[in-house]
Picture (tube, rainbow, N blue to C red):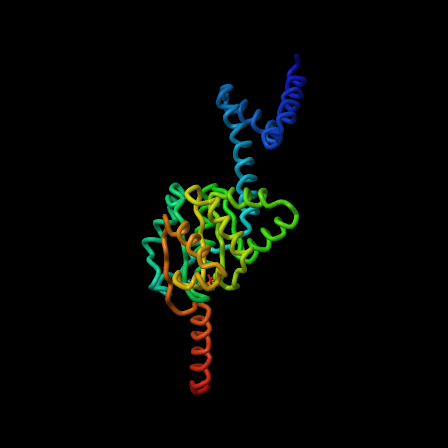
Length: 263
Ligand code: ADP
Ligand code: MG
């Protein structure tokens, strides 16, 4: 067989196997191998490395899209000095993602604006970057989705969906009261994940007030039981970061106004 037809066959194999990045890189890699008198293994290694890198990039992009994070926040951007009630060492420990290995849950409890969502999203970001399937939802969205699923006969599929991610963030539990059906949906999601995969949950309600958002205090108790069984809990009691920034701005404006105008 001539060089040219071998080359065509090889292109054909790569296309058939859908190794499109390798196919595209083939001419350059052949040239490189010839120029450097590379052996067969070295050539093949370089060619396949191109495909591996392309697959990896696609996989990251798809994990990223799937996760649906609401903001690009990273743990590194969190200003710990502004929120001294947060144990920085504990956050750093969580950032290693060892907690995913034994399905530990993380609860961020605190009033609005103290960085609960930012920390939850930061952990989710770290988990995506480490290649774990990760998913962000608010409690309201989760409940609405389960409600639709129940109506459309897709309950089991939806439960499998929420059981799937290695890390699930459920943001803003407690902002809205959850009626029986909604509470049951949240309860079942937490139960399907219990002891299998980690859930990060944020709430404005102290654990003692959980009974209030659920009509059925038994459901609230059972849910907390599963969540807390293996968990790390942050009780954040500080000023709202937004208000802080707002106050600082007002302060600057006020000072500017009271300062005598310079010539
Ligand atoms: P929560 O979810 O507790 O209501 P967020 O996480 O949404 O609060 O934080 C509110 C806003 O303040 C966001 O824009 C967030 O990035 C910012 N923020 C809050 N805490 C901090 C912090 N310690 N360092 C940097 N930004 C913060
Ligand atoms: Mg929030």
